[in-house]
Amino acid sequence: MFKVAVVGAGPAGLQTAIRLKELGVDVSVFEEHESIGVPEHCTGLISRKGVEELGLHLGDSLQNTIKGAKIFSPSGNMIKVKTKEPVAYVVSRKEFDSILLRKARLIGVHVSTETKLIDVRNNTLFIQNQKRGELRKADIVVGADGVNSTVRHLIGIKTNKEDFIHTIQTTCTGEFNPDFVEVHLLDYTKGFFAWVVPISKDKAKVGLGSKLGDNISEALKKFISEKLKNARPYRYESSLIPCGEPLQGLTKDNLVLIGDAAFQTKATSGGGVIFSMKSANILAQTIADTLNKKATLKDYEKRMKDLNKELKLHYKIRRYANSLTPQEIDELFVKLKNKGIEEFLEKEGNMDEPSKFVGKLLTNPAYFTMLGTAIKFMTA
Image (cartoon, rainbow, N blue to C red; front, side, top):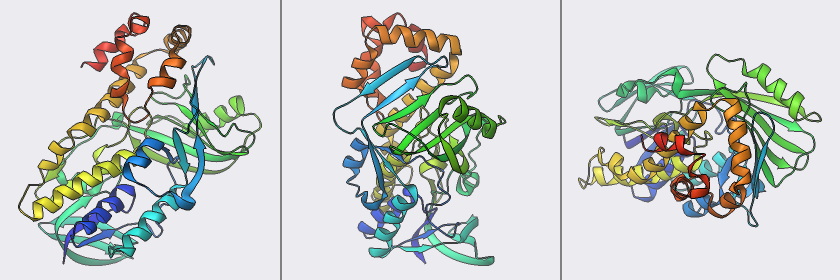
């Protein structure tokens, strides 16, 4: 019997397990797939600041460094933000997750692949291991089992289809600027956008997201043919990402959620690696304190207050962006650029923590009148 069972071996689950083991807690990880980090749904774009704060070693997972972004409105108006130093890294999620897996196993974390959680009753886990049914015991069960979380279902948290975005991504060969990520706000990507994340000058991860029910395969083909005429796609992956408000009520009895299962993702971009790993550190400490009778699992959400503040602000920004028509976005781009938004973002921008600059933006007289409608979303 383990003190803690972690369901899911992505960054959230592995980081939770690693930190628990470092705190002296006996922990086991169950992963339903045969291999860790595949299929590779994520762009692997993570902030330099987040990497440094977490003390991550990227090693062979590092594919590229990013120094800026080009953001295009539906009609092609561009806002370009460039910095002297790298602001983000592009990593291979397969290699990134493998580094975490090796670290976990090296310090004694037990990791089982091809092991799927079926049910939890009290401290008994019903699992399917390579098509065989088995029982395991654990005092606490961590649901790091992704967007379609079984543990979230067991806790009883309900979600709506509007809380999810359907994404598709391909790897393309072609000609790309390796310093810049591209974001394209298109009239046929409802509720999200298309992206170009360069791996090198001749290879990039290209994808888009849209609301459930849209034909994203055809949308991606259209985007590539219209915007990336020399690009040649050769591998596709599709997935769901949570883009709703961070969930509340993350614990019930001995069950607790982390990562995508808890909607700990940035609704602006769908990125969740840095936030989920920071959340994992908070959760691991809370679990250790709970086992030592110094806290309860419910203290986890109290300790998540600062991170949730940022996640909620990402969600409010997404709601505001989704409220605008393509024409309104085009007009806003022109006005913002004329008022110096590029220079403002180069100085003040932060891809993880919008609270660092949103307040300054909305109270700046240069932008107040054109962003007045945004205030009702930010203060709701």
